[in-house]
Length: 324
Ligand code: ES4
Ligand code: ZN
Image (cartoon, rainbow, N blue to C red; front, side, top):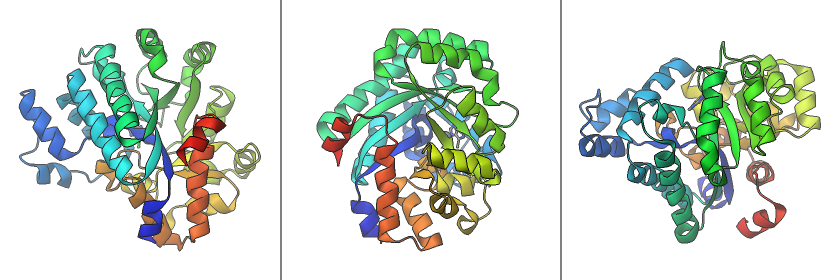
């Protein structure tokens, strides 16, 4: 089955570029940029990837990204991920970036976006992997801060296609960002939103009704609300599920407790993604493998999941044809 998963053409729709930093690259960049990481070695850093909830992960995720500073660093980080994706037969990826975690440490928006974009172009021409970029606001910060970030990003608007919402979910509902997402839509960007990862089903409804999200990132807690499940199924709203992430952040105790098979059986448009791969112990193929083993998924199930990933992508039918 692992070979079958490996050869399936896939799209990855939920991936934070900051969360692709492997400890080896973190140490190399720390040395180059003369920054001290709070770990003695690569092994010690990897051993710290042991989380009790979303916040305990985010604390390490924001601290680690301090080593990525120059346009070249952002390029190298992004290209390393895209090489890995290509090796797993990922044909298309829609990548999140968190500009506020960089502008807060005085790195200009252009450094971040131009570095990432250079790698996306290179991967398209040299690896045949197509990509789109999605800016994500940090929801633990204010709506005014998100609005300012949007304004700073507008000069680079041709380099990203959508905007999302991530970081600490509990206590920061989508409704906090209604005004900025109204402006996001007025500017013509696609809208996605992390919701129902740690937060209640109500946050998923808010993302749909108040932000007009076209895709829900995670969304696994929808299963607690039968009316919401019916709506998500009827409207075929894509859910970008990240199984290893959910287990490592204790959303589910073990993979066998994950509700992804019930979600598939309920007719939801489920996709499988890696979120922050080195932190959670696997890239996209390892996520497919983990759920295949836990639920005895058939080849047909796996083909359906891979097909869903293209259905849910922000690509025209013509663009999709070229990829598969
Ligand atoms: C994230 Cl797993 C997850 N959830 C919310 N925000 C995030 N940013 C990076 N990974
Ligand atoms: Zn995420």
